[in-house]
Image 1 (cartoon, rainbow, N blue to C red):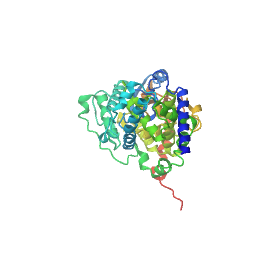
Image 2: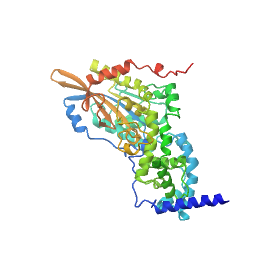
Image 3: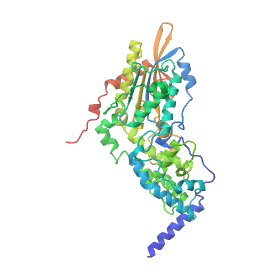
Image 4: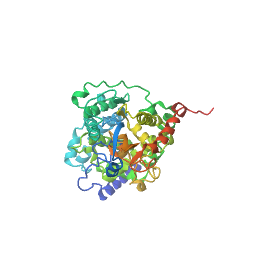
Length: 456
């Protein structure tokens, strides 16, 4: 029995140390809604508006003739896996947290404890992966926004000869397409739009799902893809968060990484859904804690969907070919058909296409041991893939006297964004981009790329 006494003593010492270290952060820190990784709501996400002045100067005398737009679906309910994990953990955990505070442990305030007293998941099996109401509003606002940017292209009437719409087999992307068109063309018009039937495999919008090589070498490769994330859990940065968050919830032992992630995920979902209220599940995290948890999430997506593995960028070649073929046709015929190409897909699609274009490339790979030096990184999921993230390429026809040329504006989250690895300035000359896109198109062979090469 002596060892039990030692364990109790160690736990009591740990608890006293935590209390002495002032784990209860002073004041009420607002939830950093712009830093919730891939669960960041679009209205809260950071937007870079710095390049508008230069862009407008570079497209003087130009008229937009074609818009190619790739959207991530809007804010949604949890996936089946997330929902199962959170519903298995959080109801019981909420009761323990309340009991901890009744026994004099923990840092939550009365209003937060009231939220947790009879907490029950605000979703059920029928909600899984569906668009949440905030997602409706995000996509409708995006449709209105793009119409305001190019009113001569989107004049309030939907013509199937002028606009191409496509989305994946997941309900949330079809729902996103509907609400985007509702915002762009209005309530009366959207009811008359016949949306296409989604199909699978879709090599433009969900190419990775149809790539056995990517599934095996990246997505299901625990040894390499998720190594840095697993190592980060063992670092002092992450362990400090686990201990301090647990202490603020009144526990005399640290939560497991899975339980901590369940608390963090519920915080993120509720923050994305309800901008006007604070989730009690966010209360134990400081701003620094949120930053650590964001990096924990980033280490997953960086290797699974972005610069962390070279196969990620290669699998997006059919999407790049689609841009090239639409723009090439418009340039050669001087007639844009269609005028708008609207695609609705997923964060994996967005991140792979961004990396294919060399956008937001960090100065070094994200690793488990460089969190501190990467705190000002340009690649973070909160920025590159919040809910409703969108990438638009706009083809402009520019004339000065008898001289005619074409330029391409790259819009990320609706704002002009440079492509420093591919062109000079903010508005790229098509003559600069065309050879690069043509090469990607000519060498795109997903059958060959995605073939599994087993050792014989």
